[in-house]
Length: 360
Image (cartoon, rainbow, N blue to C red; front, top):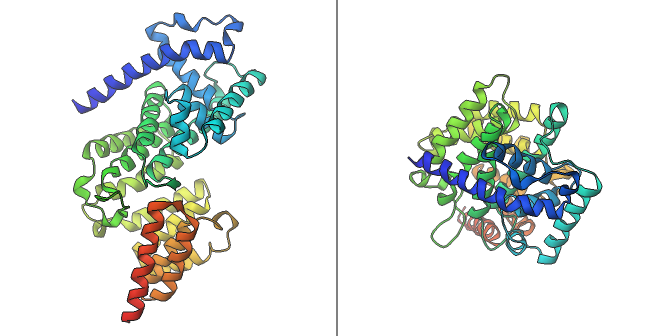
């Protein structure tokens, strides 16, 4: 019943959004000049037209910031003020991004269509990237007073579910939906009574949303059933599934997670994935093994200002009984984050390490 309700709501929202955006796209992007009467779409055409909007808003000719802004404005139905507030930037900045994005699409003669073949594959990657970027900003806000912004997660999930319905044979679409469903299941447990962050291993797993977990696992199964090796999003979803299936943190299958991270890093190399793999290695084979991998990443320019690098290093040092070194890492991590709640958490962990050093 819950699944049916969500599907019905998504269908209603999709049709309402399409009706509203048919007129807006026709006016703003001047597509009507090509003789395209979008307002005559039948129910059977709704899916193809909406998919065309998604691919247009996420066209690679636009910058990543412009894709996000245009996607939320055109497909999410958010106002310019709401988008600016979500990403903590001036309203004028978002307005300019949207105007420039529309102008760029017109000047580049981007067609209102769902591309095929190699172009579709290339464009689909951009679509998935933008949707996940929106989700991540909601799951762990980069700045501001709130650590999570559930509304952004819900919007990304809505777009992902629609895309999965419209492209049922694309395994990576289902992989992304699976990843977002499973991660979204933890949102209620990620913050405490006063809005403070609660780390994964400290969360009350009874508060995890079991419906979202079941939906995520089902989407992951669909991704795997379509044949071929799992893609980057599906592999990350499989990693998230390891957490979802474990009754407690201690019962997590960390060795399997390391193997999944090995596959993910090989498929899509990324210093952030390498850092996450080091965390899994530290849990599976001890903090010393994890610290060795983290130390190899210290000089990586891509992680120079990434606050989670010293945060992870601090955690591993603390587990190794080196509180003074850990404290310094937590202090550094706190200085790098722009999120107030996360800074408070890291400062508190630094204070705990200082107390442990004195007690020792």
